[in-house]
Image (cartoon, rainbow, N blue to C red; front, top):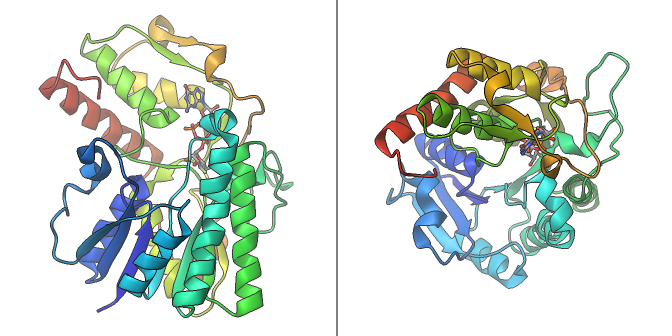
Length: 331
Ligand code: G4F
């Protein structure tokens, strides 16, 4: 039986990847950071919690010894490093914590893999945030686009990307970076813009709220569905050689387009409800993202199954259903 270890197993991507790998017959190990509310640690894993092939262990990216212990216990064939402080604006509030988890945490994991199970294949969750405001002449970012991050989070991800390439070359380890553009779902944290818009618009539709307050409406992002992107992670580790791949839809929308689409779907007028507030702006903004994933499509045959519109409808429908059943809840 193939074994995989996932850091960040209880996040959006970790939970979808767990379901995907269990379906493929893997034994899946995951590390959980201790949380005082135990239910908060596993709610995204509800559909698979208690599965005989799912093994959860307490460990932390800040705690090298805990990573060593879990690797020794699991001896995985594949390691997916999805753990991070992944919120870009919050990385300006907690830059050191972000660097330690999202940057140095990766190095701790690589060093532990090198010492304990050096033939394990390692997937690193790299990010389009690494490109900053660099765009190729044709309007896209791709594997060869220069990286000039504009946030502490982006800087930490560039460190992780580089240390992965360095370990691959220095120690001949199978380590691959997936450079993923924004990917969303109903499991996305509701302080990321897609799910914030979906959730608040659903509340407005049901009469539970009367406003949505946002930051930069001009920024554009290339938004895909997390379910499609976890499949890419797995494909990247099945390739015959370790390599780095962009994963994106190739289509971008502005935050304003996102708002217009969601409010239109709910038959609401955004001008009546949507406001902006500088507190949601970042000290430095990444303006535009649009990815070219030709390499991933051509080398590995990856395909998208969701459109932006289907994904946003799924998210809005999730929140409509949630608030109809729990009108008092804050989500
Ligand atoms: O949803 P966001 O917070 O995602 P962001 O910053 O692009 O980062 C996400 O994608 C990255 C991939 O490039 C990941 F690496 C990262 O971990 C994360 O998953 O913001 C998207 C855009 C930004 O331009 C932001 O300024 O939406 C703008 N925005 C406008 N109003 C807002 C808001 N973002 C948030 N979170 N909240 C707002 O009220």
